[in-house]
Amino acid sequence: MILLVLVLGIGIGTLITDRAGATGPGDSQLEIQPAGKPVGGPLQALSQAFEEVSKSVSSAVVNINVETIVSGQQGRSGVPDLFDFFGNPFGNQGVPSQPRDRVIPSLGSGVIVDPKGYIITNNHVVENATKMKVSIGGNPEEYTAKLIGTDPEGDIAVIKIDGDKPFPYAKIGNSQNMKVGDWVVAIGSPFGLEQTVTAGIISATGRTFAGGGPSRFSDYLQTDASINTGNSGGPLVNMNGEVVGINSFINTGSSFNSGSAGIGFAVPSHVFVRIYNQILETGRFSRGWLGVSMNTLPFTPALAEHFGVKQGTGALITQLVDEKSNASNTAGPAAKAGIKPEDVIVEFDGVKIKDTQDLMMAVANTIPGKTAKVKVVRHGEEKIFDVVLAERTVDLQERLQGRNGGYSFEEEKSKPRAEIGLEFDNVPQRLARAMDISGGAYITSVKPGSLADDAGLAGPGQRGGDNSYVIVAINGKPVSNREDLLNIVRGINSGSPIVIKFMVHFQSGNGNTTTTLYTSLIKP
Image (cartoon, rainbow, N blue to C red; front, top):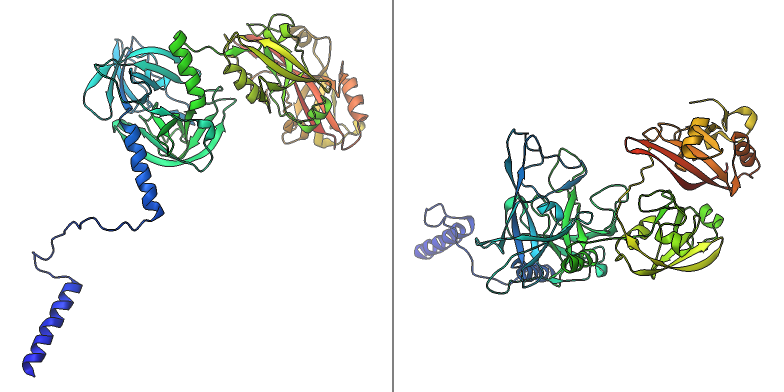
């Protein structure tokens, strides 16, 4: 009996020791377990898919080392606060001015898209480069690259390397098939760490930056895949192993943060393929030009009704211009085809136009010399014009940035509601001469938060700059002076739309310009 108890005691002690962990040096060593059964289920399948995608594309992803010579006192400027280009892993603090030439190193990424060695990257990665060295797929061997062509406005560049045998290359997918929530993989060299792979989803498609950002001519793919300094020019890849975007920039949210905030943007394939093909054919990329100025304020339902646009959307033409952006009713492609101010373009070469951004991108991404069918609504009637596009040679960005006295909708005797928030007077003679107009109602002040403010109207200095706003028509009725404006608005019923045609005179160091715009509000 004693022996049996002793044996059981030893067995129990051994079991407790095995479960609780031994203290002996030999028993404390770790061992790597043999491959076991996957426990992830669908997640394990997703993990394997990421692995396969990475393997299929990584061999075509390149690291680009760039040298740029900065001469004399020239320094390197910083990047915009919110739209942070990430092609320089050595920081964005700038380079101190030196009395002699200096070689400034930077790096980025790219992807081989042709076995002959053609590489797509960002323009800002290779811009002003005096030397480019490329390594492929993490291999130490370097190739000297030559520049084939660039499109600075689209932030795309094509470079080429030469070798004894065909290079691995990536296939191109259709970015227009991507949907919000689709998985994607970003591959590049963040902070010089080559062949870094990150995963995320498509956060938005068709992301545009009309008044800023790197380009007004690309509808970016937005992703939360981690993108950082050095990722510029690298591919954004779908789960078929196809390149659907070229990673271009990130929004850090602050000038004090240069790292990824999960908001990255890639030039989509339906844009960069067009740029690439034209660069290979001609050595550069040229954009179409229509020769029009467009209303940059919202095309409201009141405006749609006023101009007879049943579909409710479109791009309102305010002026026809020549190649120097001077007003001309005869010189530009649109003018020659018969398009007129106050026409609303609703379709361009088969593409539905919802707003001015749609039209600008459709025209800019069309080859000059092509005849495009342009559908407009004129006084409620649809018309189609054949327009031969010219080449875009200027890139004017309309920036509506923006005393008291005279008449005001705030005055007791005028009786209109104060919520309009508009004060106005007759146009000063000097301003009338500068704008080449005979009259109108000169806006002297707009109350912040008022209906007039919401409609985009402003007094001098209220939207930045020394700009002057003059109302020239209300609901199609001409306004020659302050009395006209007062009487016309007083005669409009409460709750009815007020369609306002106005002109803005911009003053800058480059000269003075005047443009015509339309807006609307509902009379309170």
